[in-house]
Image (cartoon, rainbow, N blue to C red; front, side):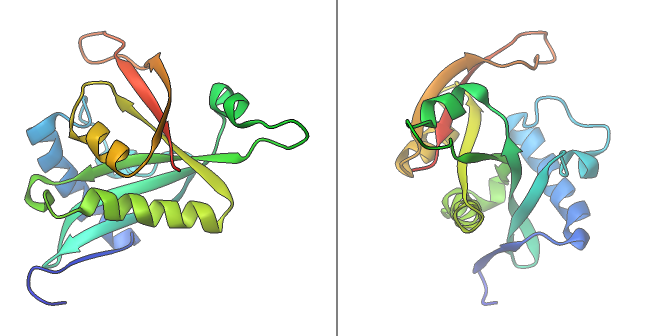
Length: 172
């Protein structure tokens, strides 16, 4: 790999500790995740995880994304149903982040593209949720053509006990 080149590829078991280290830099900068997990490696492997990718620059992990298969979001499935057709199977984006050092290089879009390609190959419709804070993540999804399909209150609380507003997006 040439100097400055960033490679996006499947996450391997050996990547988990370096991904957790990268996640710490994101937590310090952005408070994501809002509550630091007691076991960050385990947090990076949520139930239903079907695939994950990393962005690597000069052998350092600078980004990550995962996909959870068979998401059962009744409201989104109902929106997608068409008369006489079964609703598509849903997969969800999870654990998406780019480190401060990796930002400004289009890595969020490249990671989303990797997840989208996987979803298409496996016949899933990709969705995600994001805190409705007007931040750069929302701008990224909208630039990429993701469609806002719902606004809700999160079912998980912040450390302060608040249930934040979230947006639900579908990949085009």
